Length: 401
Image (cartoon, rainbow, N blue to C red; front, side, top):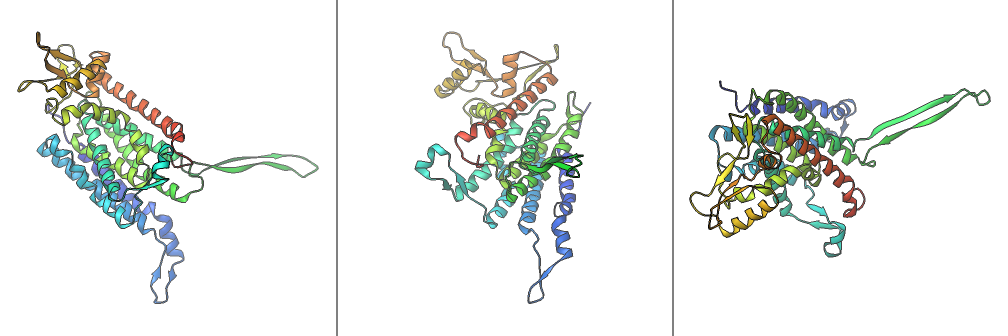
């Protein structure tokens, strides 16, 4: 029985169509204001206050998402090797970076308190900031793709991360709340007690509110699309996302992190992906043999997943690879097989967080492993919120955390 693959193309298409249909609503206030009271210059030209910058950012984000969809589908069709697919997201981020440059985007970063005696309060990065943004888009896209291989893994990561971003955005919106109590006092003809307040961490900054509204506009439809696809991709999966969904979701996260100016917070929501990437580096960069697929091994007799392995067949492990694998083994992250007598490493479990779960928790069903991954992603988001709104005050002052 065959199952439809590359269904991430359908998800991406629906997502992008929703974002396009949302454009008139996102700018409805500006459209109404321009229609009601346009201002005319001396030459008779209409001078409006339409937010062209916000529209350019929105459209460039759509273009980057479209390019990510196309490149992801090409990856599904031609099955591009890892060493070639790593820089692909940089191509999709070009429209985003060009609009950021044309609008004279900020390339300064706030220096942490302990380093300000050296660099000052602000550090100008210039072109290095664009390199950082392109690398951010590359990481967000490929980190989800690397942590994949079981039913529901890719889409569940997108669901938890998008939910975390949405919760973070809601903290910055001005939510009005209040109460009023009428006291029937005969002397004063009644007395009303209460008031109206507004909550939110934007502290009256309209720019912060607009940035997080933009992020919310992109994340809400992404969450809806991913939840719908998660129903079909859950074990036993009836449809598979392919690399297209990983490219689109990763690019969407990079877009909001760059354009809403909270890339540090975004990276905190990728803590499991960062750990998995660091763990995978010896295989990704050729230090340890890297099979084409590092997914857990399925045992048909027990219906359980086991940690898959990579073998040193063509050549022995180099001294550096031996040291790295020995350290990982001491930390309980890999399982090594050594040659009797010489002690040379002959094989190792593949360097992914999914295989680490199977080594530490034992063989398990595929849906159970997906639940462990979701729990890890949720715990990572909780740690991210604690760092962002707790520990960050130790190294950043004010609201520049």
